[in-house]
Image 1 (cartoon, rainbow, N blue to C red):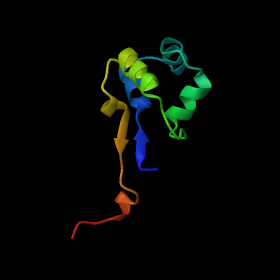
Image 2: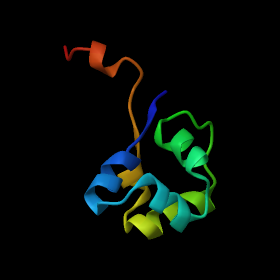
Image 3: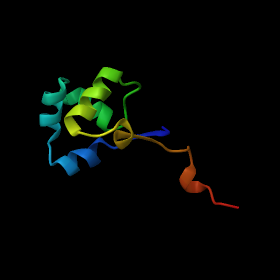
Image 4: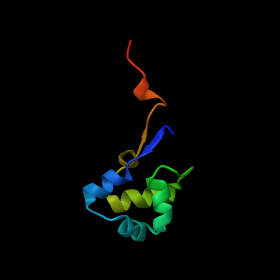
Length: 76
């Protein structure tokens, strides 16, 4: 999937556990794991906003776009 999720990076920077983040955001740890592991098909803006508020970050700190097969391409 071309959208990569970097919640683990922010959790490490904030020294916060998945359980604590889930509780503070108001979602289940299972749903946070689905999002964190890149298996989610969608994310509500309200959930994204809550994640950003709790982690004190911007949406771009949690989500980034990666081109499909970018690692396989070489520059001409």
